[in-house]
Image 1 (cartoon, rainbow, N blue to C red):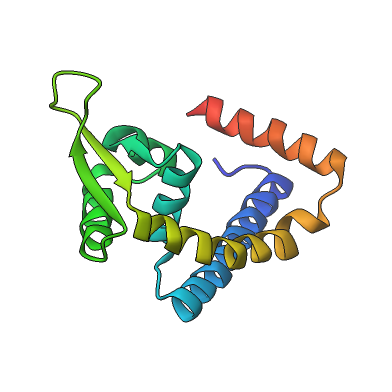
Image 2 (cartoon, one colour):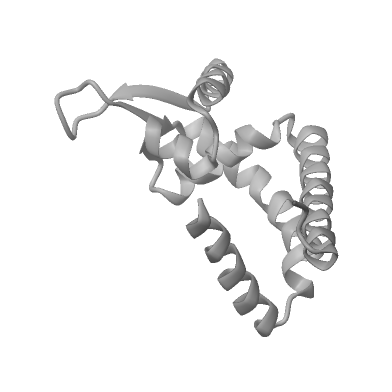
Amino acid sequence: MLPDPERLQTWRAFLTAHAAMAKMLTHELAEEYDLQLPWFEVLDALAANEGSMRFNELAERTMTNPSSLSRQIDKLEERRFVAREKSTLDDGRAVEIVLTPRGHDMWKEASPGYYRIVRRVFTNSLTETDVIALTRIFGKVLEAD
């Protein structure tokens, strides 16, 4: 059974807005920094977490399945933006993904362009009421999972 027309229209608007943002961010990162959007998201997650995360935590944070994330990490390692290290927090079987100095420099260089688009296209147009409503709405969606 289909959702009611208003909710279906809202769903489609959300998908279109997300795709438009992804397209703009992808273009900016590729043209200006030779980065793929998923790679930036990995660098951004690591930078926000003091430069390192366990592989599984990173997969969850970036909403990436482990096999896709592993391929992304391979490419980022080739560019020397990240390194895989054995975790020192347990018996050494867990893998930590660590942001290298070169990766941190790339994140610092690319993040202003990324966040400029986020501000211009998304956050600048939101009122405080919009932010509260979206936070509540997205929370409901995540809880339904």
